[in-house]
Length: 285
Image (cartoon, rainbow, N blue to C red):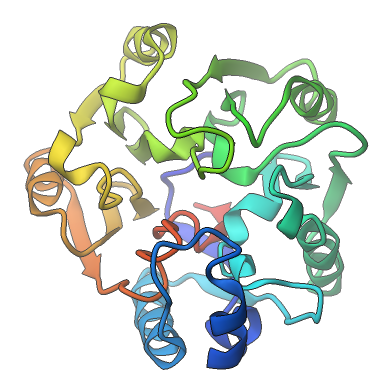
């Protein structure tokens, strides 16, 4: 159980099922706080190319279905579900417009034979972007505007007492309306290698990583806003990143990583959802 092993199975949702068409995009993008209006046809092409990179390591993609209740935010499948050694945990979304996603994911997972352990309910909220498994017994979780104390309490009960849950309270940054998850400032590259943006990282959490023997690749200030820190490991030290972050790419390569760069002007840039956000890894080798 980790975030860096070779991908064997993961979930994604294509723009055809999330955005559906340009008219839906045009109706939703402003209310969902996207920076710019995505181009639907370009999104479909970019997503297909991204999927081909993922398949290159032998991964099976489970494509999640469309539903009339979904917004185009459902393209970012990471946030609606988490995984643990016992199965999938359905999240309870902190963003009101996305509250219906976890149940739809749960139905799709059960249909695909993927075990669902349970879900976060009631006043508890958790989004998948706030969870990072370092190994089978260690998970870091961000306390953010999208993941609250009650959600963390329920998560701990689901994973069991033998799992160490390291809670890191993140800063206010841009406020409640912004998408700011733990994975906004850290992406695992290997068992002992993390890509980080230290200026927004809580000191105790950074010290905890270093005490565990982690080596840190630092994202430069100039590439944080362009999702330089949003990098998906598809195998140990083999990663996918968004185009436009050449210095971060260079630093990862210097640390021994093979880096795939994808065009993501429609699937990532408008909604600030990079390669990690677009995927829900289920099984890694």
